[in-house]
Image (tube, helix red, strand yellow):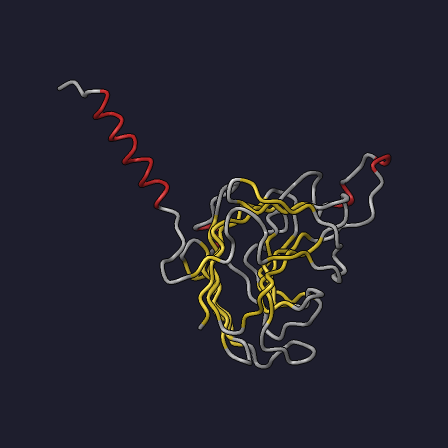
Length: 232
């Protein structure tokens, strides 16, 4: 076989690496709403019952969300409210964590929610947070495309004063729901994008036991990147 020069090997390596990086990218028609450097344009809710002091930081283009103190969660919200939109976000979810992607959220965290909970097997389900949802949904085909302990993309489309909501995971359609009515208590038709760290319970480190708090394991995290939206 013909010898390959070091320069050629470098070019091949660079090309393969670039292809790998490009294989995960924000759809061109969507506008980034996270700058990858800091939380400008975002804030932590100070009114949600989940907790008001979550550990939220940005590292290497990733939003990292944890509990702080352990047992108390919180919600990170976009400053801007959205009505009709298509949202794209990539998430990496640690085991034994319970959170969600909030859509049309109020400041206190009343929202339609895409569940993020691997231990419960409910990731991708449509629930209501602090409100009853008329029609829920489950991502029954998620296992066919899901990458465990890795990054997975969520694309969520929400339109209409009476919401129609569609979810794709890793660009495969999971479900589409047309709600029979607007489920928000005050009939809200717009709201914030949110990422939730679910509270578990008050916790004393002296107890040394977290098994009763299985909604969030110690030092576990939800990670988000490539957050972008298109208003419709």
